[in-house]
Image (cartoon, rainbow, N blue to C red; front, side, top):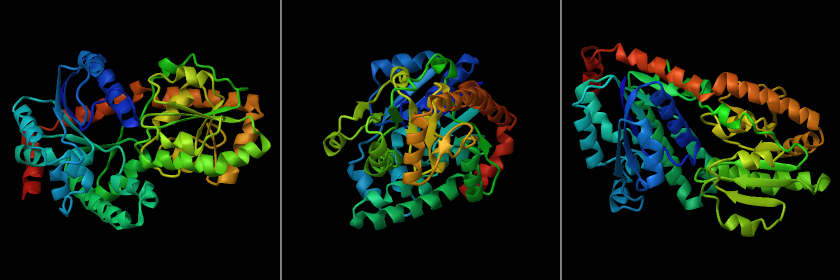
Length: 411
């Protein structure tokens, strides 16, 4: 199939779960022989490593610059009631809109738009042409906005609440338009279905199981591992909760426990604020296997849901036992006590950590169950097949059949 695929970021390097998802789905579909044109609007220039990683997978790579967040246009457009702030930052882009319209003159079997917040430059052209397309929504921004609300200064909180209200209106408008909508978990599909009033496909998040199959965690090391992209409020809040509440309780009974923190955009001031040799600040690691081999278990005290967690799947694929919350496990069909251990109270999590670190046999049991779950349910080959099934349904929609939808929405 010829696929036109749009993204509001470069999917390399894989510094976030979303980028990891995009890169691996592109790779899987390219290996299946599909010819993909990737249209990207990026806040960072295309680097040589990114070009070398992406171009072998693609028929064409088109990268356009995104204006800076501090652009006067973003400030002037911020009061517009129809667009939430993230849609403004990633939209109102004439060059991107024009390039997309040019591409629509070519024959496509599939048009795939990623993220509702990046939809604005494409909306009118898709309505006007009446072409079948799918929109993939990784998480509802109107819900995720709550993750940073309490972290904001008091004077910004009303603006954040207003923007979340705009997001809900935007999501209701956008998610009703595509011929097919894709979510990353059954939970998200249900939420999107409530907003859009339609059936939503699930294309799961995944993991490269072969990449992690030979990792054996150091079950006696007393080292916990957390991995996350710290541009997202949910990960910031998780580390602060761990270091302010949970780990101090663990250290009372086991002062030898250490926490290794890896991920993109690690705040520099944290190392000064929590100046403790038992905390290891690793930053972004393009390959996690070495730090996984030196760690006993993966600890993810996440209190905000949305999507399914690539970092947890990577830990499971590496055979690491996982301790997390109900929100951390959301989006994954895992059982507490079988595939992971979980709790939602700080004292409960501290007790689970203390007990599990003293039970290597139990850690090994959980790690193996998680590894099998990841391979059977969440290898990227599984996700790619699910996406191809959606693509096949799109190819059965002739443009003439799709035209009434676009015409109706244009009115």
